[in-house]
Image 1 (cartoon, rainbow, N blue to C red):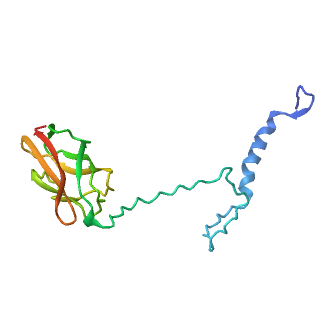
Image 2: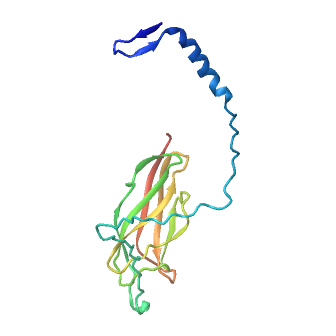
Image 3: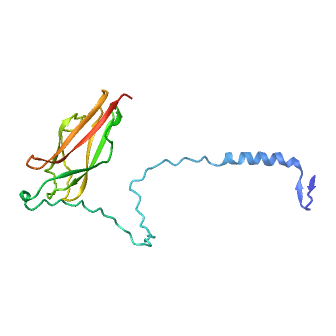
Length: 192
């Protein structure tokens, strides 16, 4: 028995369908079994590929180089110059500020080299009185040319006892002679 489809072509009856399915199921079993290909690592590195397309910048490349810090030139004859330091202002921690125990204090002052000598690394700032507050007893005075201002910075630590504390500092020249205005840090230590 054959069936006629609407399109007009002939198709065998549905009794052939089980034979076709059986044939399709057994056909792959007759083919030889595939063997897996073992992995073999390469014995030589892969060759480098040369670039064929290089991007050129459309604008010129600007290279920014840092400029070196200016060198402080000492006065030609130090015996003929005068040393002086004028206090200008407290940059941080105003006098009488309340600070909690154990706090780190970054104290900074603006001072002016009002003398005629240029300050170099031989000029020092020394603790001359009051509480040291974990600061070093002596630090280098920042280099400054005559007539210029500079910032002095000292790191202190607040003590663990209530009270008012003061730390006094003085500039010294290379010969160990004091000069200029002393600078101060005054705080009140308070419990947290």
